[in-house]
Length: 61
Image (cartoon, rainbow, N blue to C red; front, side, top):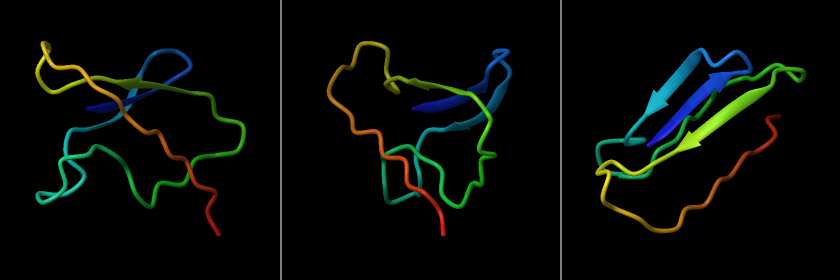
């Protein structure tokens, strides 16, 4: 689960599954201002689960 907050702690977005067929969380096509500070919270769907994750941020065109 991926939750995005601004610097004041206001939730800006939440995603559990990117698509119905992809269980990974993420956002696509989101434009973020250059000077915006974000806080990313990464968690599991079930509180007892654990594992590794990959965080990928790509610069747009």
